[in-house]
Image (tube, rainbow, N blue to C red; front, side):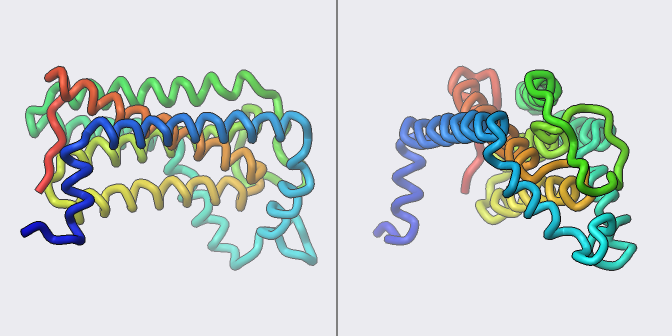
Amino acid sequence: MTNPTTAPLAWLRRNVELTSLIVLAAVVGAVWAFAELADEVVEGATRDLDRDLLLLLRNSDDPATPIGPHYLQEIGRDLTALGGVVVLTLAILAAAGFFLLRRQYGTMLYLLIATGGGILVSSLAKSGFDRPRPDLVPHESIVYTASFPSGHSMMAAVTYLTLGVMIARALPQRRLKVYVLIVAALITVLVGISRVYLGVHWPTDVLAGWLGGAGWAMACLLGARLLARRGHVERERSE
């Protein structure tokens, strides 16, 4: 007799097309939300909201000083480094080594292409906008490029969420899948928050980075499922 609590999950597993459509809808939703947000930013409609949210993380008596003790600024710099190119590259190579040791060569190659392509798209996205960095507060981290979207936030979302969904596919137990995805999402969120806390990005820059990166990761999941059907990528494991 089928357990009523697990019946919906079992039904979804049998109807792969439906789950693929759900993932596709999520990708379209993320792209649409990114486009709408970009339009609002270009028109200047988010200026007041960005300003208010940024100042929430600053001392009301001295906006040049972030809230919290001094060591919190160092924590912020440590967290923001998790979205840097060097750290992300190391994470990608470590995950590729995981699949190499499992002899899942198709998945390893797809992982490298997916994450590398996402980071490239993130870099190119900045060239389409020329939004100035926040000038209300001093920057607590060195920056060189324009503000929208947040490169650290988008690259972190692209990398960690894509790594998360790919590693989750290789794990048989549902609780392990959930754990990996939660960790990937948590790191992504912390990187984005650190960018606002350090005063180097407007909140909407970070939100755009999250949307773009999440959309890319979900598109990679959809691509992995399609390739798995053709035998180019190893199939997802499940209990």
